Image 1: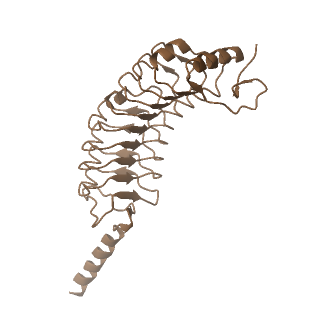
Image 2 (image 1 turned 60 degrees about the vertical axis):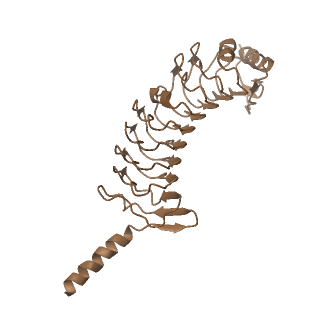
Image 3 (image 1 turned 30 degrees about the vertical axis):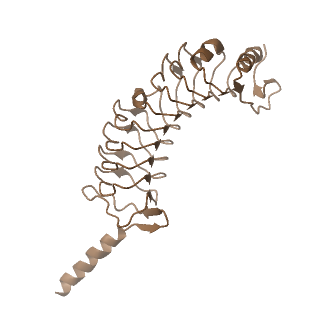
Length: 286
């Protein structure tokens, strides 16, 4: 009998480590709870669930299937390198998912199944080089996607499924060129951030289809020329463009700035300390 009681106490103690704690509006969990075949159970969980400690490495299938009312899930600043297919199944009401600053390399088809109400997805600061073709087929309501600070060498074709997307961050990747119609399915996109890549040229029609784009960020690339006529033809709703820290000659840059200003498009002012500048943007003279 004493042995039985001792075992019961040990079992309770082990389970208690897996408990989450809730404060007003937020439930915070440790990492021990994410065991394969042992879905997370939290009584009276809040709409925002976050994980602490920074040691979480994988999200097994069905981990959150009993938390169907969850709206925001933060698993940032951990060491997650594996999202199993169905990792977020039954999260029918999830609106925001953050996996910022982990060690993901690929996002597989089926990972986001059931996330039909997802509006914001943050995959920034990982090691992602590939998003499989059908990852976003269940996330038609997504309006903001951050895949900045990753290892993309080309624009992932999977984003073509995001018909409602308004904000796309592709900054700090390894993009060298952008082929025509790279974003042509994203006709609701309003903000596109391509800063801090390795883009040296833009093909004619690169931004074809972006009829509602208002802000384009091309800062910190290797551009030395820009066909403003073609670009403005594609981006009829453009309000602001960012061009600082590129490879423009001063006269070329002046012509570009003048062309945009004639169309009432603001070229964001730079803050270069170079002796040669146009609109605050550093440039080179012959």
